[in-house]
Image (cartoon, rainbow, N blue to C red; front, side, top):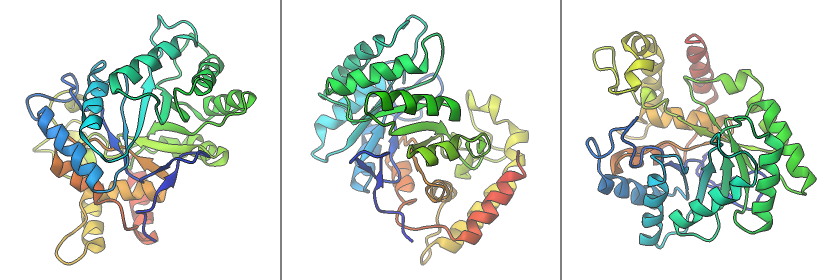
Length: 317
C-alpha cells in the first residue's frame, strides 16, 4: 500500500502530506551551521523542491533562532503560488505567567509569517508554572478569534495529552496533534504510552527529529562522527553502536528500490514512521536533502522489513 496519499490532521478537515518540512535548521547558528555549511538560498531551494515534490506543510516555531525561521518562511510563502499549510509553536517562557500570553505570541508569529491565520498552532512544551488547562483555554480563545484552524501540543506525555484533550472538549474543540521526538533511535513514545494515547484519542502524532539529527542518514561512521554540538550526544562509540541498524537500513533500501535506484537510509527511516501512523517533519538544508526526504513517500516497507527494523532498533536501547 502506497503512503503518498494525504493524512488527516486529527479530526480536522486539514489533510497533510505524510512528510512535511521542518524549519528548525533555518537560520540556526547554534545547533546547526547556518550561514557556513548552507545559505539562505540553499534553504529557499529546499523549500521549493519540497513543495514541488508534493509536501504541503511546513512546521516552524517562534524560538527557532528566535523569529528568524518564521520570517524566512514568510518570505518564501510570498514567493510561491503553491498553497501550503503552516504550523508554528508558542514557547512557555517563564515570564509568560498566564495563558493570555499565548495570544500575544500567536499574533507575533502571524505578523512574522505574513498570514492572517495559522493552520496549526502548538504549545511547544508543557513547562510550568502555567498549567496545561490554562494554555488550552487560551488556545480555545485563539480558535474563537479565528487566529488558528487547529490546536496542537508538543512534547506532551500521555497524561498531559489527555488533560489537553479534556480541557479543549469543554470548549467544544478537539486536540489535533502532539509533536514528539520519535524515530528508530528514539522509540520512547511507543513504550511510555504516548503513542497509544494519541491513537486512542484521535490525535495525530507529528514526529520531529525523525532521522535523529542525521544519525539515520548513513553518512556518519566512527571515523566520521557528526560535527558541532551533535558530537557530544552522538560520539564515536554511539555511532559505532548503531552501525548494525544502518547496515540493515541500507539492505532494506536496496530491496525496496527500483531499477538501479535504492532507497536511502533516511527514506527508510521516514517510511518506517509512516507505517507507525505518524507524520514526519525532517529538516532540509538544501535541495538534495529535500528531494531525498520526498523519496520516502509513495511506497511502503514490507511487514518483514518493519519487524527487522524494530528488532534491530530494540537492541540499541
